[in-house]
Each structure stands twice: as structure tokens, then as C-alpha cells.
Length: 144
Image 1 (cartoon, one colour):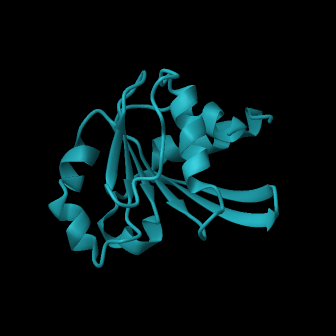
Image 2 (cartoon, one colour):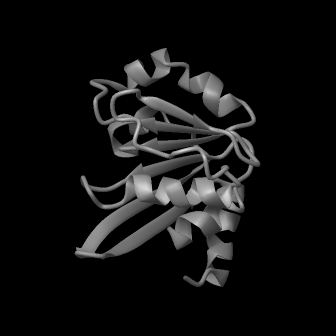
């Protein structure tokens, strides 16, 4: 949650974030932290869009939260208007990004989460493109 909140306070329009990790590693918890850091009001609830596919959260920057676990092909994501979402002024966060890697933008952040214990996680965060790489380098300032 703390890492997500730190990231959320620094989101910028047009950013796409791909999240990868096994079931239960905390992808949605990370998005909850991002939403909090992005100024999401307390009365809104961040949940996994496993069955709805897309949730939308209004904060300082609009966030589209997608879950691609149930999609059979990347083309199904395209049919949901993914290109329009990533071309706009919103942030797009994609859970199970590895399942739709071929349709994701060239410039984005890629976050892999690995469970290292019952209540601990390891994060591998990469920036793809200049702005995302600069952001990832700036993360050395983050402390939980």
C-alpha cells in the first residue's frame, strides 16, 4: 500500500502501468495504494475488475483499472477501447499485463510482484521509454 500510494501521488496523464504477478500477490492492493496516493476519495472502493474488466477511479488524474485475466486474446482488450484509453489523459493500469503484452504501448511502467512470504513481496519495476525510465530512477527516494 505504501509503495502504491507513493506511485499514485506521482502519476501523470497518459501513463500506462502493467502489473504482473500470481494470484494473491497484491496487484489490486498496489492499485488501491495508487488510488489513495492519487487522491481518490474515501467513499470510493477500489476492487479487482475481474468480472467487470474495467473500473474507473476519479482522483487528481483519472485512472482506468483493467483486469485481463479472463480475456482470451489481446484483441479482446482492443475491442474494449484500450487504444482510446491509452491515447487520452488518463492513467491506465493493467493487471495480468503479460497476457496482453503485444497490445501494450511501447512507453510504460512494468511492475512484477513476487510473493516472498505470507506478508512480504518483492517488486521488480522497469520503465519503458524516457519518462517512465526517469520515474523509475527517481524511486530511489521512496521509503516505506
